[in-house]
Image 1 (cartoon, rainbow, N blue to C red):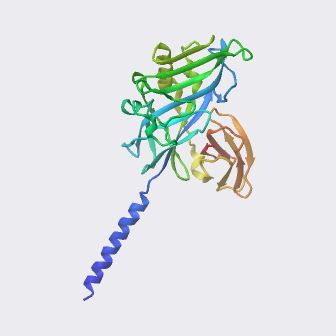
Image 2: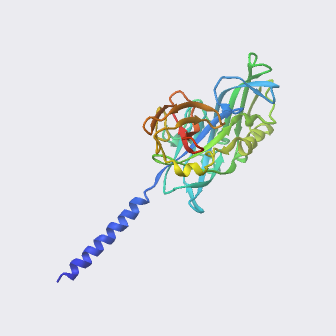
Image 3: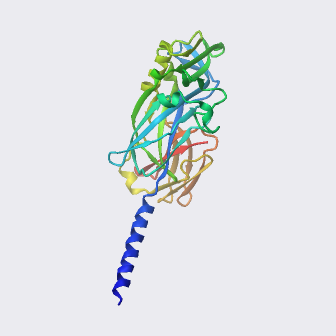
Length: 328
């Protein structure tokens, strides 16, 4: 008489176990962080920077570009494509862009395309809701139905010195033939909400072999935008790899929260006393503090967005590293 109940309980247990497995595989938020830089320093709008070994200065005024057809190689060779996802990267706006929610634990390689794919490139932008990257924007990123979107829009001013950098520069790449694929090996960062990929974006490389010292205005398809696109595809992006792990890392447990962060970061360490350093993407120590009872708080509100490394020095060669992403 009890056998059906036993069978029923086993069935319920199996269903519960299946449910728990499903819960454990719930997808997390995947983000891409573009750590904007100019000549190795944080990217700042309207600030002249030396170009071409100091031959002239360029002051960026606007940099926006489209990213499409995003794919991740992850977790031992699995491949996941983010269908119908487009990013409009505005260097003067935010650094972190949410791709979506996916069942991904570790990302080994990132594939992106600069521009908008051929089909979407010739759609009517008015069909999209205002918040969509392909909707009409101000300033506009759409050239017209025949040509499509501006894949890259770079604007600024140039001159022989920082004080005389007044010559207008406008280079906008337009046309299906300028759609470019990029594959970047990466080391992903686990965050409180999922996984992020952090890319160092050295935007000064956009002007490699493109002389804008006397000013340049070119919108469309031609040698100028071919060079701009080639530079974006081959020279700008590299993975922001966390500092190498040494033997001391294995003996020190470090927790960073929240991550990504925008205001205050709490660091918890399995040591009661240690020095804490925050190091930026080019290896500079931007702030230092000490642990109090195994804890420390770091204000990052005034720091530039991008990827950083928290270094815990507990003495006697025991050093721990933890990645940190700052967003706004």
